[in-house]
Length: 192
Ligand code: NI
Image (cartoon, rainbow, N blue to C red; front, side, top):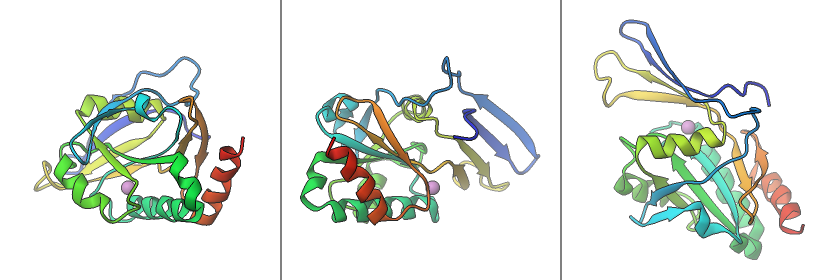
Protein backbone atom coordinates (compact mmCIF):
# COMPACT_ATOMS: atom_id res chain seq x y z
CA UNK A 1 0.00 0.00 0.00
CA UNK A 2 3.03 2.27 0.17
CA UNK A 3 2.94 5.05 2.67
CA UNK A 4 0.43 4.29 5.38
CA UNK A 5 1.35 7.26 7.47
CA UNK A 6 -1.69 9.39 7.99
CA UNK A 7 -1.41 13.08 8.26
CA UNK A 8 -3.09 16.36 7.62
CA UNK A 9 -0.57 19.06 6.90
CA UNK A 10 -0.95 22.72 6.17
CA UNK A 11 1.74 24.18 3.97
CA UNK A 12 1.64 27.95 4.21
CA UNK A 13 3.36 29.31 1.15
CA UNK A 14 3.79 32.80 2.54
CA UNK A 15 6.33 31.91 5.18
CA UNK A 16 7.20 28.41 3.98
CA UNK A 17 6.00 27.44 7.39
CA UNK A 18 5.15 23.79 7.82
CA UNK A 19 2.57 22.84 10.35
CA UNK A 20 1.55 19.24 10.63
CA UNK A 21 -1.32 17.69 12.54
CA UNK A 22 -0.67 13.99 12.76
CA UNK A 23 -3.50 11.54 13.00
CA UNK A 24 -3.25 9.03 15.81
CA UNK A 25 -2.02 5.82 14.24
CA UNK A 26 -4.15 2.74 14.48
CA UNK A 27 -2.63 -0.27 16.12
CA UNK A 28 -1.28 -2.23 13.18
CA UNK A 29 -1.55 0.36 10.43
CA UNK A 30 -4.23 -1.58 8.55
CA UNK A 31 -6.87 0.41 6.69
CA UNK A 32 -10.25 -0.85 7.79
CA UNK A 33 -12.69 1.95 7.22
CA UNK A 34 -14.91 2.98 10.05
CA UNK A 35 -18.17 4.50 11.18
CA UNK A 36 -19.32 7.99 10.23
CA UNK A 37 -22.25 10.25 10.90
CA UNK A 38 -22.43 13.14 8.46
CA UNK A 39 -24.92 15.31 6.58
CA UNK A 40 -25.78 14.56 2.98
CA UNK A 41 -26.28 17.04 0.13
CA UNK A 42 -30.03 17.01 0.76
CA UNK A 43 -29.47 18.09 4.36
CA UNK A 44 -30.23 14.71 5.95
CA UNK A 45 -28.06 13.20 8.67
CA UNK A 46 -26.71 9.86 7.48
CA UNK A 47 -24.47 7.27 9.07
CA UNK A 48 -22.71 4.25 7.67
CA UNK A 49 -25.25 2.08 9.52
CA UNK A 50 -27.97 3.07 7.05
CA UNK A 51 -26.13 1.33 4.24
CA UNK A 52 -25.75 -2.08 5.85
CA UNK A 53 -27.06 -4.62 3.38
CA UNK A 54 -25.68 -2.58 0.48
CA UNK A 55 -22.18 -2.07 -0.78
CA UNK A 56 -20.77 1.40 -0.27
CA UNK A 57 -18.50 2.86 -2.92
CA UNK A 58 -16.70 5.73 -1.20
CA UNK A 59 -14.52 8.54 -2.48
CA UNK A 60 -12.93 11.25 -0.34
CA UNK A 61 -12.25 14.60 -1.97
CA UNK A 62 -13.28 18.25 -2.24
CA UNK A 63 -15.35 20.16 -4.75
CA UNK A 64 -12.66 22.76 -5.55
CA UNK A 65 -10.40 19.96 -6.82
CA UNK A 66 -9.54 20.88 -10.41
CA UNK A 67 -9.08 17.42 -11.86
CA UNK A 68 -8.47 14.41 -9.63
CA UNK A 69 -11.81 14.39 -7.81
CA UNK A 70 -14.02 15.12 -10.85
CA UNK A 71 -12.22 12.37 -12.73
CA UNK A 72 -12.58 9.90 -9.85
CA UNK A 73 -16.28 10.65 -9.46
CA UNK A 74 -16.82 10.36 -13.22
CA UNK A 75 -15.14 6.96 -13.24
CA UNK A 76 -17.40 5.85 -10.39
CA UNK A 77 -20.42 7.18 -12.30
CA UNK A 78 -19.32 5.25 -15.39
CA UNK A 79 -18.91 2.10 -13.30
CA UNK A 80 -22.42 2.48 -11.88
CA UNK A 81 -23.88 2.94 -15.37
CA UNK A 82 -21.94 -0.09 -16.52
CA UNK A 83 -23.32 -2.15 -13.63
CA UNK A 84 -26.87 -1.37 -14.76
CA UNK A 85 -29.47 -2.99 -12.49
CA UNK A 86 -26.74 -4.35 -10.24
CA UNK A 87 -25.86 -0.77 -9.28
CA UNK A 88 -28.94 -0.78 -7.06
CA UNK A 89 -26.88 -2.82 -4.59
CA UNK A 90 -24.23 -0.10 -4.46
CA UNK A 91 -24.45 3.24 -2.66
CA UNK A 92 -21.88 5.71 -4.00
CA UNK A 93 -20.68 8.30 -1.49
CA UNK A 94 -18.53 11.38 -1.90
CA UNK A 95 -17.14 12.51 1.46
CA UNK A 96 -15.56 15.95 1.47
CA UNK A 97 -12.52 16.72 3.58
CA UNK A 98 -13.05 20.45 2.95
CA UNK A 99 -16.21 21.10 5.00
CA UNK A 100 -15.48 24.82 5.38
CA UNK A 101 -16.13 25.33 1.66
CA UNK A 102 -18.17 22.21 0.93
CA UNK A 103 -21.44 23.05 2.61
CA UNK A 104 -24.66 21.11 1.99
CA UNK A 105 -25.62 23.70 -0.66
CA UNK A 106 -22.28 23.49 -2.46
CA UNK A 107 -22.45 19.69 -2.47
CA UNK A 108 -26.01 19.78 -3.78
CA UNK A 109 -24.85 21.73 -6.83
CA UNK A 110 -21.72 19.60 -7.29
CA UNK A 111 -23.39 16.21 -7.11
CA UNK A 112 -25.61 17.07 -10.10
CA UNK A 113 -22.60 16.39 -12.31
CA UNK A 114 -22.38 12.74 -11.31
CA UNK A 115 -24.48 9.58 -11.11
CA UNK A 116 -27.87 10.40 -9.55
CA UNK A 117 -27.53 7.78 -6.83
CA UNK A 118 -24.51 9.62 -5.35
CA UNK A 119 -24.77 11.17 -1.93
CA UNK A 120 -22.34 13.96 -1.12
CA UNK A 121 -21.47 14.05 2.58
CA UNK A 122 -20.11 16.84 4.75
CA UNK A 123 -19.95 17.61 8.45
CA UNK A 124 -17.69 19.08 11.09
CA UNK A 125 -13.98 19.07 10.37
CA UNK A 126 -13.58 16.57 13.19
CA UNK A 127 -16.25 14.25 11.76
CA UNK A 128 -15.01 14.26 8.17
CA UNK A 129 -11.40 13.78 9.17
CA UNK A 130 -12.27 10.92 11.50
CA UNK A 131 -13.87 9.21 8.49
CA UNK A 132 -10.93 10.04 6.22
CA UNK A 133 -8.47 8.77 8.79
CA UNK A 134 -10.29 5.47 9.11
CA UNK A 135 -9.76 4.98 5.37
CA UNK A 136 -6.11 6.04 5.48
CA UNK A 137 -6.68 9.10 3.31
CA UNK A 138 -3.66 11.40 3.05
CA UNK A 139 -4.46 15.10 2.65
CA UNK A 140 -2.28 18.17 2.60
CA UNK A 141 -3.43 21.71 1.92
CA UNK A 142 -1.48 24.44 0.18
CA UNK A 143 -2.63 27.95 0.99
CA UNK A 144 -2.21 30.99 -1.20
CA UNK A 145 -0.16 33.80 0.30
CA UNK A 146 -2.70 36.57 -0.21
CA UNK A 147 -6.06 34.94 0.55
CA UNK A 148 -5.28 31.84 2.61
CA UNK A 149 -8.79 31.51 4.09
CA UNK A 150 -10.49 30.93 0.77
CA UNK A 151 -7.76 30.12 -1.71
CA UNK A 152 -6.15 26.79 -1.09
CA UNK A 153 -5.70 23.53 -2.89
CA UNK A 154 -5.50 20.09 -1.33
CA UNK A 155 -3.30 17.25 -2.44
CA UNK A 156 -4.77 13.93 -1.55
CA UNK A 157 -4.65 10.21 -2.06
CA UNK A 158 -7.38 9.15 -4.48
CA UNK A 159 -8.56 5.62 -3.86
CA UNK A 160 -12.12 4.47 -4.32
CA UNK A 161 -13.18 2.20 -1.47
CA UNK A 162 -15.63 -0.67 -1.76
CA UNK A 163 -17.24 -1.56 1.55
CA UNK A 164 -19.22 -4.78 1.85
CA UNK A 165 -22.79 -4.96 3.19
CA UNK A 166 -21.42 -6.01 6.59
CA UNK A 167 -19.53 -2.70 6.84
CA UNK A 168 -16.09 -4.16 6.21
CA UNK A 169 -13.72 -2.64 3.71
CA UNK A 170 -13.57 -5.08 0.82
CA UNK A 171 -11.45 -3.48 -1.88
CA UNK A 172 -9.62 -0.31 -2.93
CA UNK A 173 -9.37 0.93 -6.51
CA UNK A 174 -6.47 3.07 -7.61
CA UNK A 175 -6.64 6.37 -9.39
CA UNK A 176 -6.41 5.71 -13.14
CA UNK A 177 -8.75 2.70 -13.24
CA UNK A 178 -11.55 3.14 -15.77
CA UNK A 179 -15.25 2.65 -15.21
CA UNK A 180 -15.45 -0.68 -17.02
CA UNK A 181 -12.67 -2.21 -14.96
CA UNK A 182 -14.12 -0.86 -11.75
CA UNK A 183 -17.53 -2.28 -12.68
CA UNK A 184 -16.03 -5.67 -13.45
CA UNK A 185 -14.20 -5.69 -10.11
CA UNK A 186 -17.35 -4.69 -8.22
CA UNK A 187 -19.40 -7.32 -10.05
CA UNK A 188 -17.16 -10.06 -8.66
CA UNK A 189 -17.86 -8.89 -5.13
CA UNK A 190 -21.58 -8.57 -5.78
CA UNK A 191 -21.58 -12.21 -6.83
CA UNK A 192 -19.86 -13.45 -3.66
NI1 NI B 1 -9.28 15.94 -5.63
